[in-house]
Length: 432
Image (cartoon, rainbow, N blue to C red; front, side):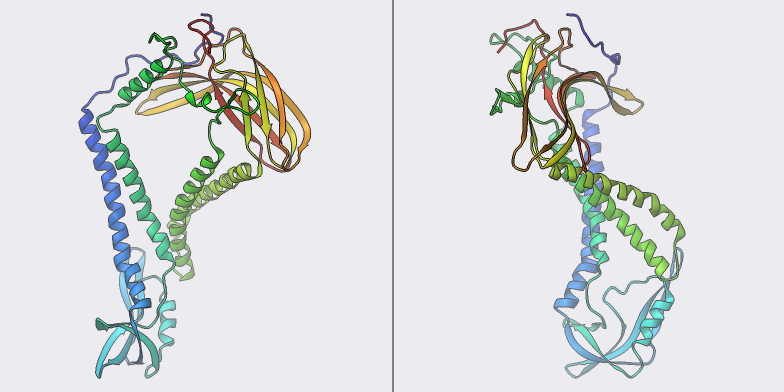
């Protein structure tokens, strides 16, 4: 059969994977297991050292009065970038007739930079003054002079939570694919495709044509089939939101440390400079997220229906387009697009490149408005090129045909929505 579009990339031959499959699977389990255990350990550590003690202070500690004694001081410990400090207030309180003298301030008792800030805390507790305190009923020697929660605890919890999530997802993936190489999974997929593309006698008619049963299992309202969209806008927005939250949560932790150092008079300039590019990337991700959100929420669904499927070279079909949303449209187009994808090995990395090889505009309308509650609808004709290469998919190469709706909307970001279709060879079997 003549081919209108030759493959852009030659097939890679002779590529083989060596090594033990079992050993590789064990390595994956160990790798993701370390992530999982690190996340669990981090969460437990933060819960036991910060979250649970703060919760007990606010819910289980009992209120009392204490007297400030002489001897309050600034505790000092060495740090990587200089000494760290904490206030230590000497107080005495009485529980059931027994006096307890301790040095205390808060439940965390952590050392931070900024001596002047700690000296200001000491001035708030003059010697001989009576102050409110809260003590542990299980151990009256555990006393605090301030209560509340540390807002930065939530940021610290995000870091081990990310490790926990990545490790758990990796472990589940590794267990589900235990002993199954990529080649074996590809062979199983190809066999499934061959089985679905066989005729009633079990003869394989289209061994390399990909299977898209979801195209014909949804009937249309105007034409025979409603085409599925290639990528749901909702899932794209959700995925981008998750990336924005995880990335910026990590950046926020670093920024808090950097800003805290500047406010306390001990700026950490290497950390500050290190945060800048990550913060810029975080801002860019936020911009991309809101752009996707605007497209998903401000621009209504795009629906495509087609009269027959699969398609054959040289034949004509009807396509129905429906676009909803309260929009002022500069231009709306519908095109038949063919793309070729090549997957190849470059060193230890697997790369996939995509290039358009054909584009035919089927419909175009400019300068019109879509009123609320009344979608724009139109029917157009689709003529598949006579010498078009049929849809094709192998381990390293793929020919994919799509119907692409593109909108240029006034006051909104432009959008593009693709709907895959299959083109079969003109000879090789009966047509449904």
